[in-house]
Length: 245
Image 1 (cartoon, rainbow, N blue to C red):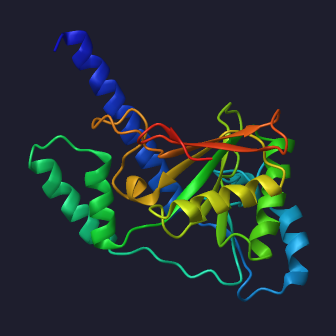
Image 2: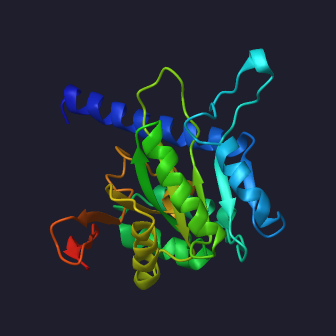
């Protein structure tokens, strides 16, 4: 490997590690949550307007004594968190890396199945402002109605051009039918942008874009076909590059 290749590899690894660190920091900071399991539905619309993602600052506002906000989330009426054995998963991952074997998606999938870390999420990246607020309203209402179990959106980062992200979760990334149903629900809310699906196992293991293992961190991609009648998503399995819808 040339010195330039080595430099590029180190920069890519740093980028992935930086994304992992930012994600962990957001998870650890306070969340703004509407929990439909215990909060009256009548309070939802006011909550939705109060905490529009384009107006909630990721890093808070010291002048107003506003704390940082990691995520804004809605838990559906039947939401039941299922994390699996994340500690065991990470221990298995360390052993796999120490083995020196070339790491593939199937290996990571096997670790996830063994430790029951099976949740995943559709991701959509949207410009801050009307676009993210409008999309989030539709997604959040779908969660409240029980069509989606749980969803979250990142708060805004003032003075940054970075897009905001909405995450819509499914229980089992290995269940393709479940993944496709979630995409269909998202599309019924009016979202037409590109969607990518990422298993949570990748998040727990710090596998982000430009990672050192050369793994694509998303396993499905959904493009909304505006020319097709009826209009629908065209979803590709990125692991085997096969269109599934």
